[in-house]
Image (cartoon, rainbow, N blue to C red; front, side):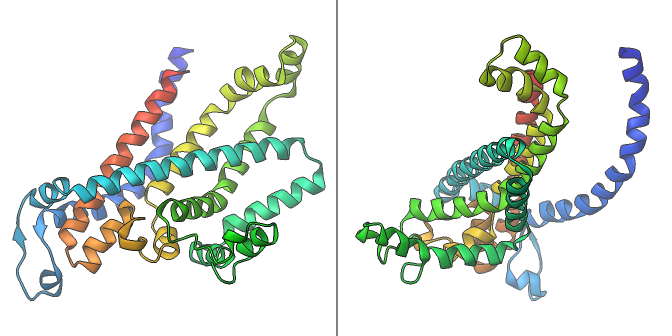
Length: 299
């Protein structure tokens, strides 16, 4: 078996080579340019050609790493992305289990609703959620006030830091869970019925069957869904920028992507913005690599 596995290695590499070449062509040069720009004093005069480029080495990284604001935004981004990833996985997996047990018509309606959320453009979805939670005309405030919560009438969901982050996280989970739902549902349907019947005959409870039979089989799919969610949620930009009006009151809702945008474009410090991009890329690679290694360790 081990010999056959080694013999299949060169064939697998040949199949993967075309995709690897395309990925390198699309990613290598932009990343290279990002790294190069981060090593220069690159502002609006340099971008317009009115001033020459000045090589400053790692000064942009020193400036960035010595800025307490960067570390605060980094911590906020990690916590916010973790909440979004966990929420997406829980909602998507729970609905996948529900869809597997539901009848045909409710299951179809569930998938249509989920795919509708998935297909909604990010900008449009953000404005829809803002309208629903609008402090003056929002449906949510009207319903809560109608239920006797008079304090919610005229309540601003985007003024307070944690309230705004919660609203944005809910919108991100809403537009992200369909990917997990479809992925996990396909994995559940692919589990042979004989395996589940054998677990039932052995007297395994539903909880034990889920943790010792279903979950190990679904672990590769869960790994893919988690990595995708980490990448998507760690570099979120549109929802935060639109729903908090550029980062919230006094920048209380900044995440790294919005912080980089403010530095690079609003502040015209393109070199510093590129340095933030490089740091984000390295962090994503590290987080993804550590997660993959941890998952392999539990097999």
